[in-house]
Length: 127
Image 1 (cartoon, rainbow, N blue to C red):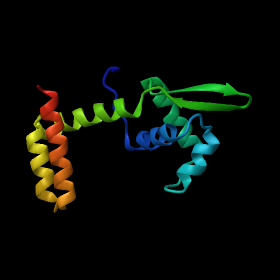
Image 2 (spheres, helix red, strand yellow):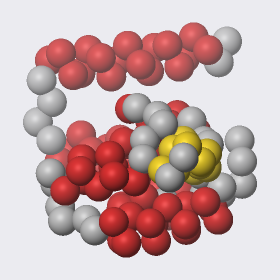
Image 3 (cartoon, rainbow, N blue to C red):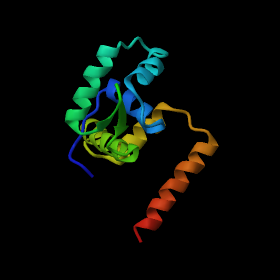
Image 4 (cartoon, rainbow, N blue to C red):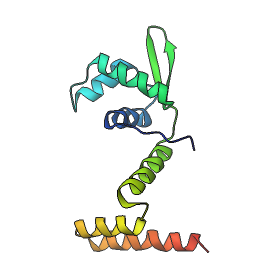
């Protein structure tokens, strides 16, 4: 895993696009992002430059267009973000996080069974 990488909300949106389909040009990304929120070409270019410096995207020249690719895997980014969130909000306590989430939501029987399965698998992996 690379060093700590912090992505802004806007960067997560761009990375999600690239994880779904790569490569993509700036024009393709602007068109997709405009469906949710108004993004200008210049805004996206600024974001992509910052993301290049962070080491999360790269591009290849294809004539006049640049084709952008993700450098980090989605699972790696999610794992880093989850760990940072857990440490920042719950002082690293998984138990506190799960308790908070369960108290805030009414869980269906299916969700409870799925959580139990996840915990059982985790227990098996510790043996």
